Image 1 (spheres, one colour):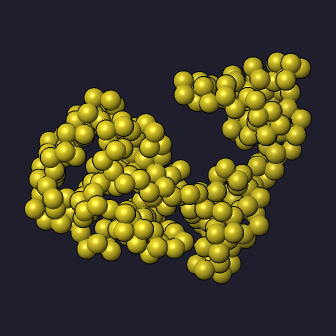
Image 2 (cartoon, one colour):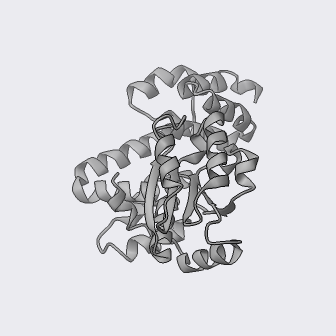
Image 3 (spheres, one colour):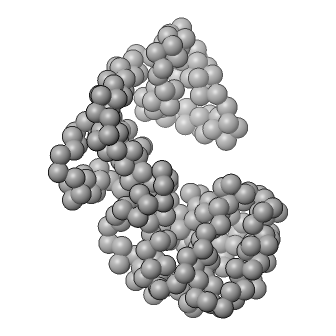
Length: 265
């Protein structure tokens, strides 16, 4: 999805968030960490913050350049700018330890006219010397009520119930919502098929069986949807599930293993 769609995301009480940040900052160049789950509005917050502060916005994508192999020279130059600038590090928590050490040195020596904004999903992945130099602002994921109001304020003929029947509460975000709205408007037939597939997945998730995994795969079910239902019934699996995600393991393999030992749960 393009940057232009992000400009339409709405964060409740945006002005209050700006005021809280400005009140807490010790100086105009205090680095800020903006933390929140995907689609919670971090990009919109940063864009609007730069506009509100009347500063130029420059972006460095750390998710694409985790080692800063390509971005180091650029950050050196940008960090010494004499124009009022917000320097947005997109996905800063994906930086390698060595790249974070480089960033720490930049934060110690950058120009007083440059303010760093580190966007991340998990600020705990940033090294403590970086966190200690920054003001941390956490953006919570939007609630169903907030998303419903967001839709109603912008669209007159959207089938809102079908969207929330499709989305799991863990998926509530402006980004996912925009995807659903776009599909519903641009290709209603495909949207109807997607919703029907989700209903079929949720029906199968009520009584999961290990020997039916090949059937689930053949039908094109998403393992994450099935796992969400299993984890709700057996929260003790959250730890092993997290380890599986950390190791980039197969969700289907984890589902099969969990269902195979279901009699022990």
